[in-house]
Length: 503
Image 1: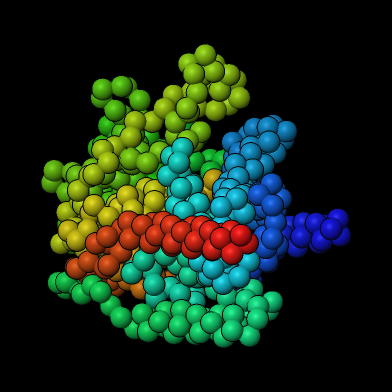
Image 2: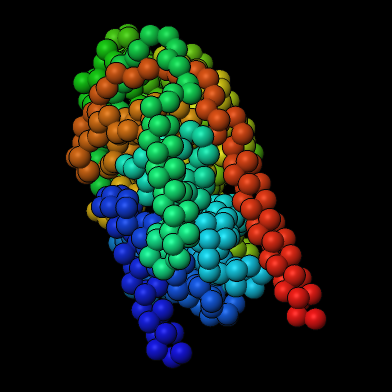
């Protein structure tokens, strides 16, 4: 027994540690179901306590390996001490690992943990409920959801139908099928093989289906990447040079229908630099180009700041970031801790969020649904803009991640958002990865990391609703709950029959 426990611990730690290789920038998408299969196998026959421990260790290994870039953000750029940075880098993966542990505990406590019901039913359903929960509990952090690993596989065809959580369900179901193929009996292997063929076959067919249609004429776009180093960006003496850089790159983009600057491209309140920005916009308009720019805006009611994207139309239209980053843009701490934050070189005031249901911005003949930075992780929050929006724009400052795997993971998330909505997504970032993404989630073009430049492309507005855009996560979540209810009732019925036959 002790040997089996040690083997299971080694198995889940190894499988968890290699899981991030299934995601960008490595993109070994086939590794995801194999990694999850190792965990499902280890959970077989485990007690609730042991199942929780194995799941927790798997989650800790996978999230530490996949989110180690947190250290870069808080230490290299946040300038926190090494000890504090290590603590924060470990804290988030530890919290996220609890969700994986909870899947094992719930399964072992109330459901079978071996056989087809477990491998193809219980575990995939519980996994989706856990991922969906961590996508919104305590503001949510849906990074590294299983479905994101499949942007280059046939499962991407399911994105416009069931969204990222539906894709996660299918990934873990394939993991269950892999377990059945290896350790199951003949009938179980036959069913698992059929499931494998059906999931991949239907996914391939869906890659050929389009739920949205082109609208209007194509438009040319230019995404400006200033690549101002994060260590210089907020220095007051850098402001003039930054304005000159973006003016020069914008002039080089004149003639394109839409020019987009990244998040907080100009590190100043809009009111303090309105004159030069309006002059840049007028020059662009005279050349036939409309300009959208990321900047900060002072919140009149509170005196704090807001993170905004301004469409330089007449009059200007503004989108205000609504889903703020905890401990990045606001600090959920008591007032007495604010002084401690100042001493730690951290901001001590909170940004003001925008309204939850802001309409798309009208510019360049399009209706543009905007997200700023990691707002694009929250796909369901963007659905209110559809079907009105014809184009998606995400602006970000991934410079905080340095030269780590995080900017590539973030681009992968944006690819799923484009496919879920069935629309082009323009992604303009300060240091990369700036990209144009097509309505199927394919990358049309990118700019190199940390190099200033302009990414140009011809895109198309789209209209219509994908099934996911119409229904959101509701069908998937309800479906998972029904699967669990059915499995629970079946388990109770089996237990009652066994009890009656013993008397």
